[in-house]
Image 1 (tube, rainbow, N blue to C red):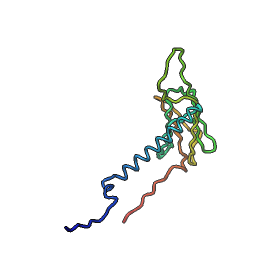
Image 2 (cartoon, rainbow, N blue to C red; image 1 turned 135 degrees about the vertical axis):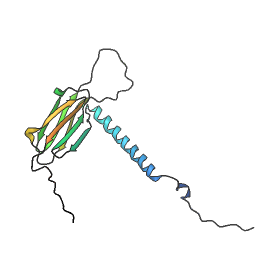
Image 3 (tube, rainbow, N blue to C red; image 1 turned 90 degrees about the vertical axis):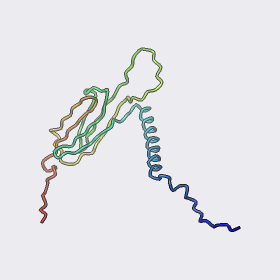
Length: 155
């Protein structure tokens, strides 16, 4: 009775395994772990951080911040040495009713977010608006800071 020799392939079972999917899941796990830890630490300290979008158009830098449930008078915007700072405080609504909370996910407390701006912002023409919980700050670029388009002739 002859026995057949076969090549041992210890990782053969892993071939159908999707390593990219595993990496994405591990990244998601670590991100959620650190985000929860950061959120918990900042909420205990009475701070939170609104999400920001920073975009650039041909003429402007546009910054949008999510600050739901706040009044515009409670938000302070300042520009100093090329750094735009948005800060404020979102106060917790206190009702005298006896309520037992089982879950609180909304953020309360003070916040401050700063963004380093490129050179060439016209600080005297900055415009801010607030609508539906989103603060929008438009920072016009100076003429020198606007990108000039150069056409290349192809022959």
